[in-house]
Image 1 (cartoon, rainbow, N blue to C red):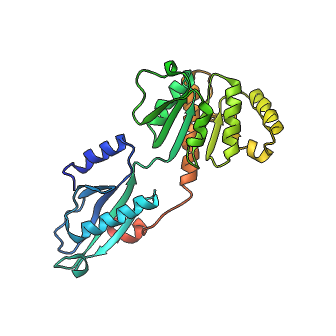
Image 2: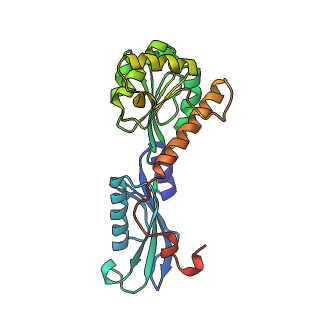
Image 3: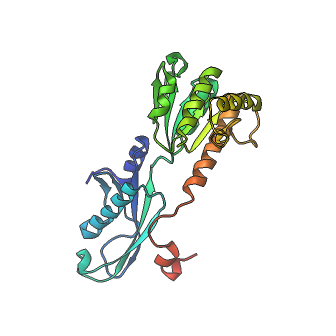
Length: 278
């Protein structure tokens, strides 16, 4: 158990992009000694703050760690009937809210540290994303890279495609069209990505499609490439305007993807008493 308060722990864990679960007592029934609203944070082997100790806290930590291990992304409520089974000397019930926090919703590789890349990466760094920013030119990176962003300088940029996990997001905006084509071939060749966006015009897309088909790529794979990328509703050619458009598309994509699944626990309406239901 760490002596750090739950709110300080959340801030520090977010800075480190470390997932955790915030546990809150949302309902107390019966003559139990715990305080509604008490919170603790569970992260790895550490507990931050307390919801009153005892077997209930131990059980809550166990559930939170199971959620971390399974990658749960949705909050859940659990009702605990207090008594001998939870080491309590009296009856009653406690309802706990488990909220997953800090887990990256997308792991993103951004290729290119030019004007648009320098506008885009700080936006992505402020989202629940883990960002690897890749370029062969050390001098193109800003002096201070946003917190939580991994700067990668590699003369063989295409090698970095294979270092990303399955389900990653790829954004290509380099200074070199032949390099863009090689990156496109490497990314599409994996075909296990969640999103691939390539900066450029419709004419650039047409040229790349032709060359990729010549290399033997199937049309259904090439069609997964977003080019032009970004939200069409966001107009403008300034680097920040393009960056906002691309960031908006990334947000829309991971929200749609992770919103498809609901995990574990009972609904709030079923667990809270009638007086608390909306």
